[in-house]
Structure formats: structure tokens, C-alpha cells
Length: 237
Image (cartoon, rainbow, N blue to C red; front, side, top):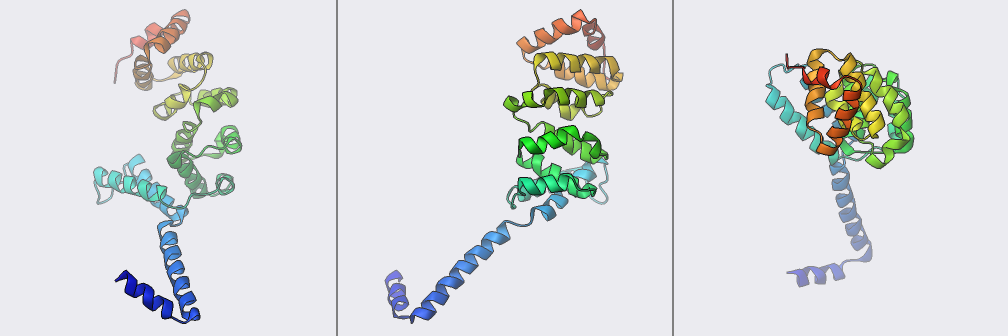
């Protein structure tokens, strides 16, 4: 069969042969672009479901259905075309909250790290004013590689200190644990002093789940500042 096809292809006039090749290439390219759909539109789909889960706005759907839809949107997003660092920078600086959330979601889901981009993000936390934005923002902070955290430590310390009631701690603790022992100890001390009992129990749970060597260092620091007993006595409410 293949030999027959090759035979007849060889008999075709050259201009028809060229047109046939062009059609095949265009078809392949079209399929490729259909696969790489616009990242902005797909991200909006993810944000819609993510927001529904955050605010428990399920409508006629169940939480499980919304979660499934969000997971499917994440898979679709990972297979869409990725925004450039320049595009992400423009979206982050936009006055439109949706633009900023699209940028944050792509950084978080795709684990995109760029020093210049994060320099801007760390310094302009106040630009991200809504709860959904800030949750996405702190998820992005966790993307910073361990070996790069040192470049941002002083500013990250100030950033974490703004979360005085540990409101975002369930998200930020992964990034906190990437910092040096000195900063980590100061941040946890601050949280133990300022959090409500309910949120402090979350801090306690994370601290007690640390590896033995890290836990012993932190415990020593907290004991020196009379904070270990305060943290240990907290019970869930």
C-alpha cells in the first residue's frame, strides 16, 4: 500500500505536490495551536473554580464537583501556552485585579521563578489587595527555590510580619521554613506572641511536625523567650 502511494505521489505535478505538503504542514500546525490554547482564558476558568472553593460559593454544584473542575482546569492550564516573563510582569503591574490573579495563578501552578519578577512581588505586597489575590500571592512565594531565598530574606521577614494573626499561615509556612534558622525563629516567635488561640494551634501543629534537628533548635529559641510553654498549652477550638 505504501509503495502504491509513493508511486502516485511521484507522478503528481510538482505544484500539486508542493500544495499537498503545505496542506499537511498547516494541518499539523493548526492542531498544535489548538492544543496550546490561550493561557489567559484557561486561567480564568481555574480562578472561577478556585474562588468558588475559597468562598464556598457552590451554586447547584457540590464542593467535590467544583474541586474536580478546578483540578481539570489546572491540567488544561499546564498544557496551554505559557506566558512570558515580560507578560507576567505586565499583568502583575495591571490595575485590573483579574490580570494580577492570572499572573499569580500561572506563577504558582507552573512554578515559574524569575528573580526580577519576585523582586517586584516581594516589595509590592500591598498591590495585591483582595483575599483571593493574597492567597495566590503567598502560594507564589513558596515557589522561590531554597537556594534563592537568601536574596529575599530581609524583605520576606517584613512580609511575614504583616500577617500578624497568622491568617495566611497555612500557605506561608512552606516559604517560612525555607528561610535561615535566625529568621525562622523570629517569625515563629512573632506568631506565637500575636496569633489568636485558634490560629496558634495551626502554628503549633506545623512546629511539632518539623524534623527533629530543626525542632530542637526552634524549641531552644522559644524556651529562651518563654514561648514554648505558651505554644504547647494551646488546644484546638
